Image (tube, rainbow over all chains, first blue to last red; front, side, top):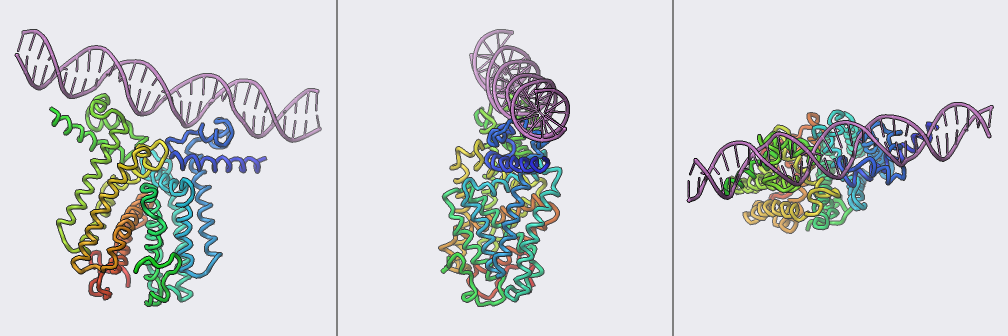
Length: 220
Length: 220
DNA sequence: ACATTCTCCGACTCTCCGGTCGGAAAGCTG
DNA sequence: CAGCTTTCCGACCGGAGAGTCGGAGAATGT
């Protein structure tokens, strides 16, 4: 019974995720979520006490998927450069997905975290913990690259900063992609960025040999 | 009379800007804006037909300030590296300002542009034009740097992409700053980024001489 | 001082939506 | 089938806020 209940609760949270990402928290009505989940509005309240609680559940559901994808990369390859490129691909995949729900939800999270009266305004730790779990995974990838002798030892000290900067860039470019849909070519933007960034991390100063071939050369 | 009227209209738009940036579009009530502007709610409607129209005016008011600051940089110095660092400083200033209204408004603009029912959802051209004006200014700075022989000619071809990437990064890191207030040191993050980025643009491969001294050395 | 216009706003309406409640339907037990 | 529990939901409540309206009061003109 309780098992059945949590399954249904997660189902509702998934539907909620799509509706929240499409309309944003304030404009997404519980009724609309209920309709798309094929249930009555009151039924939603059997599973979640408030709209806020439902939103938190929806975010957590989405975040766990994201983190799972990130960890999957670590299993797919042990080459640090490959890993970085796959991370960029993960963002890119999000961008190319219909409606870009992931990016929109990221924007929504930022809004709800920093705005007075936002859902996460009084629970910033929830978001911070997610953020740090993600950073941690990426830092581990960089450090593993140093251990394997492929990345410069010097970056170990800045590993966290580097990862945060990478995330910031990728989040930022996807947001610009939302605004300038069709005008900016996100794939090329990211390719250029990675092509410039990765050589800075490599142990060999000879970029032409170890350079990033993942997206093909962009610069001359 | 008409002159007086536009002055007051702009005054209202400025107040609206602070309220929208603090509470976000949906939660900011016209009444609250009226209170903070020291006028009655109905008076607001003398100047703006709808809440949406007021929001657009508020955004435009803020954007013009931002663009003016950006142009000011071009007048202050003609050194391209200086200019880039001053652009980063402009973002940083925004971050260090109380409440970070600029960043919040950027988030709000993204939300209102890409969400169904958002204010700019049906007028994406307004945002796109602003975006392109900003990109254009930054591109001109890069091209001027190439002309003066300080930046590599090769970047001219990618100037727009480079500027968009820089903006994406800066916007992204400020957003992460909103989430992780106090945990991430934005100044150091940006310093690291600029320190890595600028040498890639310089004509001389000798980074130790021409390197970016603006924030001081971060890497070893 | 009177008329006219302009600026302002208090009080109202109307709609939307989060959340509740009481009871119907379905499922389980014996 | 009868009794009990669990799951569901239609109908309602209350509050918030966008936008309206009619008139008060100030400013301007004559």
